[in-house]
Image 1 (tube, rainbow, N blue to C red):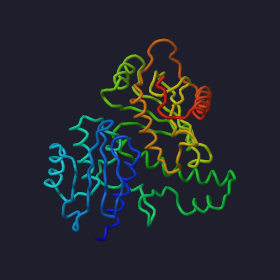
Image 2 (cartoon, rainbow, N blue to C red):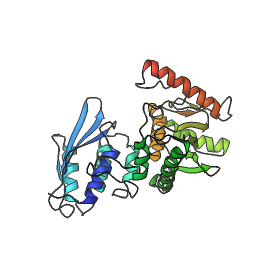
Image 3 (cartoon, rainbow, N blue to C red):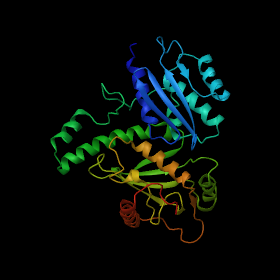
Image 4 (cartoon, one colour):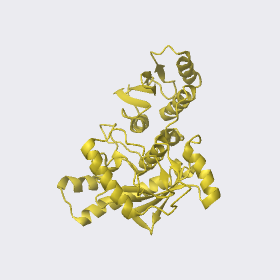
Length: 327
């Protein structure tokens, strides 16, 4: 069957949100009309879900299948068919995920927030004919890279084009609209961003500490600075916490953040800044971050953050990354 461009875009967007490396929900494209999904409840317990486009989709329902004999899974899939309303595939997947994460008491990933519109966002485009690859550069950028030019003017042009595109996308994102975080430029410089992380998982220690922080110090967010290199997006940005002082959460002394993603070896030029910000927020919660209310309450400095991250990178290059130490 022929698959429309909009449905192909939606499927590519789902693959981008939930790649095979996602910790709890993984999607693999088995054919132009079929997606295979794996929902990971915990180590050793998974649920498979397969979805196939029907000939008349979206007028006719998607075809859902799971080998699981869990009645809860069967009920969820039956409900998706019974409540068919002609929506796009992204909206149906959001309904599926909301139900699975709720029923099996698994913490929802931030990607669900980005699926609220029920469709592929306008900033997302895919390369053709391989619709699993995200196209984040225009043809001029690709020509610059392919010629091997490395002058500062060329690097600045590529970085500025990408950063203008990214800042616009982030500023208009659901994450900003829903108050999950805010973003602004430092001194109107596209290479320096200031991010206020405002909302965390409500049951987390960090979310509770932000309430106390508001009472004691008058603000209720975690402030990050993001500094982009001239070789961006081919080199990673440097990200560090400015304030408050944080224990655990993979934040090391100096305010640097212990994430392989932020190193040249772990970075990909396809990675989006919004995804990076949400991943950092999730990492803080995963690492059980808490705010220091006693002792030295001065802000982290860029110099100390860079120094601590350099030491961290050297250490992990020698010993491997794996799961970073929470301390």
